[in-house]
Image 1 (cartoon, rainbow, N blue to C red):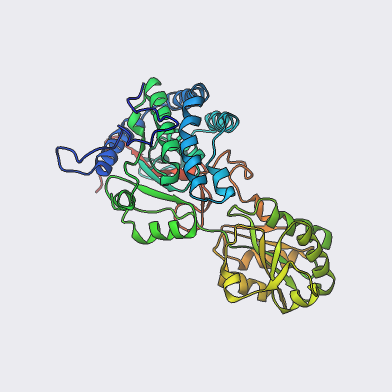
Image 2 (image 1 turned 90 degrees about the horizontal axis):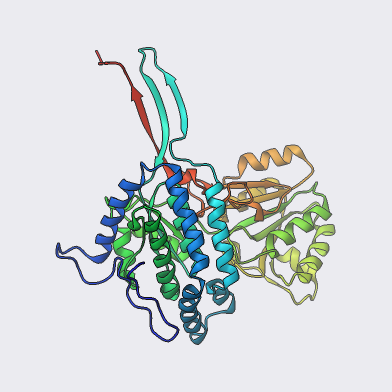
Length: 445
């Protein structure tokens, strides 16, 4: 069992024994020492076969269920503090772990076990004219740092995906979930060790101040990559302040464009689903653009459907005129076009044509997901060709940009950058590659 103290319902969370405490005898900070142990664990983890990694994941799933009471007791501390601080209910809900939610998290870990193993996959191979055999294979990234906000389920999700892909993981959650994350990482480490893998393959980054985040962001040479998950401020801080390579998981200022030749019934359904099915996630639509050729017939229907869904429309002059004195429509400002609401709000404009819609999207989009609704295949092709985002939907909701919806089984985030990984990041995106060249005494002349 881990030496980590089990938090009680009344005690404040203590610093965990893994990675906490004073500077080491070498003078290195606790964060640096934690990263060094992760690097050693990654070297031991990389050559292990799939059976070993999958065995550890199954042990994790069983341990989560077996130690549910310990986890929920720790989580109760975080939830209590959040409520006392006046935290919005939606955030408290995301923070809360119940036995049912823990069982679901354990089931998700078992689902990861069933996914194909990316490590060792041959991406390409050939025999060169000189007889050398060349193969490019997938290998783990090494040490992956995850910086994320108040969702303790991410602690388990990230650990499971990193272990499956042969990586050690450093977990830096928010202070609001510290007790929960401490308990969860204790469970994870015990299970990993019991399965014969190095416990330091999963570690909680010590400390709850911003200093520990800064140290993690600057641990170049010890941490191979950082992945921030959270709001725009968190992501910007990590991207701008890190000396460690960052895979940027961007915000979601997503757009739905309703073309002149759209099926209006389909367009209403896609718009409402994109916005209101779950508004607090990054693939929810934040702006709707409508071709002026159908605005007269589409806007009244869209306004009625959005009102029924409880959505406030931040509309341009055309939308406001169509709305009359409707209370759920307000005037759009320049800020609205740039905003990721994550709420029951949407910016709305009428545009003269498809090119104008694309111009608007290219100016304001965060590069996440855009959708076009149209029966005109040439318009759809032009939209796909001109829009530069990680995902472009044709006659489909923006809500489908998701690793599980894409059939990847799981994701560690949605990358809006263009290097290495773009879009939903599954197991392959947690690997790099290396070339293996096999000869028979070959020398270069």
